[in-house]
Image (cartoon, rainbow, N blue to C red; front, side):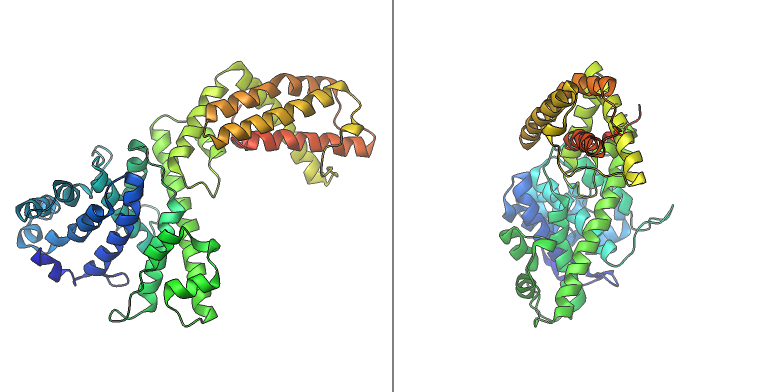
Length: 398
């Protein structure tokens, strides 16, 4: 497509030209193609052509035709049908009522386009503030969320944004005419991201001279963009799920600062919601919150808590029964989570209901014997640890 030669127009003063942007999107789309199960070559080709129609006179006069004209041009020059479709559909969804792309090639390019945009503006600190969002970054993030959830994609956002962030670091470090090392592709093939990279790997990927400042700057930028952007995704996901009818407290209970698999977050929220509708769920929540409140109060006072539970210090049979139940629940819940069986994990935790109730009915935690007290508090921490595998019950209302 001849119009590719015209992509040297500026996309953003700090982010380079449309041509540079297209090259970043291509790299990312080829990586994401593995997740959407399409040929990386098709995703790459679609990304290369995705913005070509922006330089045509008709799109210049009628901007609403962007993508649609690109699709027509691509078909006329004999491009693969999925490539042509992606040129039009990679902009989707453009609003809450717009559909998400469904073809795997379109999905790969749509995600790459939106994630490249988000990482770029985060890297130059041009984030949405209050009601101001001049670059429609909230819409881009919601688009990623909807695509991932509606297409049921297992996408680890931090890995993908790391690839994009390294490419941007190179953009900021090198002249436009200088060599452009394909760090993203090397990162992808190595399966490495941000903090897992050694200094030597950073030197290789960035083509640096080994200056510690350059490596340090790369680490700082990649980690900073990842953490802050992931937090933004969490905020947008909460808004989206609340609009879908999910309880805000359940979302807060499931999400951790490191949660970057959006589909798994939703599945955990759904499983937790169903569990809490049962009597076992309601009663376990009450018992767990009671344990958490006692722990919080004692920790605030600086009360000693044993490092590990010592069965030899048990005075009451209810302590032993709870200890055995926690061991069983913790192990079975962990096994279920490894299989991504969150309903099974909830079922495993449900065995705690009766022994937790019996413990609080029969046992005084704050025993006069300090060793016994510390041991009982350690037992409460085991309850918290077991349930924390699934969610932070202290954040759940009720």
